Length: 303
Image 1 (cartoon, rainbow, N blue to C red):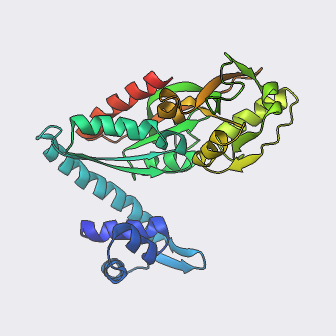
Image 2: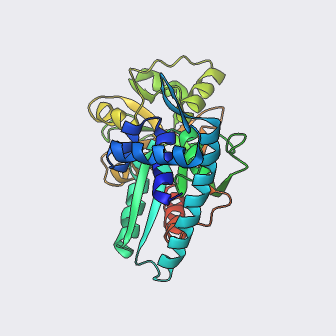
């Protein structure tokens, strides 16, 4: 079995569709279909079951997927070790992160690293926290950067290693001329007097915030709820509103005076874990190991 056919097979298994795999790989769908057919002929079995929701790996396909991931990781490792002979002149770092890191901190860390090591390329995927950890566990990315509530979920902890961990508190973000912008601290009850923008209830931030409000018997009704943090910023800039988030998500606007951040206090702790994750048994490429140093320094400086 050739690595190309295994790579095409895994793309179909991951996306559930030859068409989506074609878009992701930028390869003709006919070429992918042909490679799948060749694998099925070589192994004399059906690798996918066609279902209404897409193509799902058969039991034989699931077994091949485990073998394919291990084979491709081995091939990548050999290529990495060869490239490492050249130092940091070349390399490729694959990262998955939650949106709070993708808005500011992580792109800035990548830019700073690129200025010193311009031969290193990056691929960044923005996903939900559980998806970030899954991509790390399956070896689809080198690093995962995510907010979390405690350790990785059961099952993932056996294959995911946490390289860096800290906690970050929530702040109320406002326009710089907001009446509360000069306050040293805000309490949850202070938020009720102003329009509030929050992320949706399926996020770690919202779960912590809602639990703290419940503890204090507060019913908070946001004016704007969005499933993307970026959607909250125009509301804050254009109104007397407040948004609740981590200051790590807006380090550059805060530094430039475009937004203001006021610390929040509550009976419960208003913080979440930050984790930089990798696959437990994976030997990270040289470029990844070097970038982790940049990233953790940026995280520490932003806390």
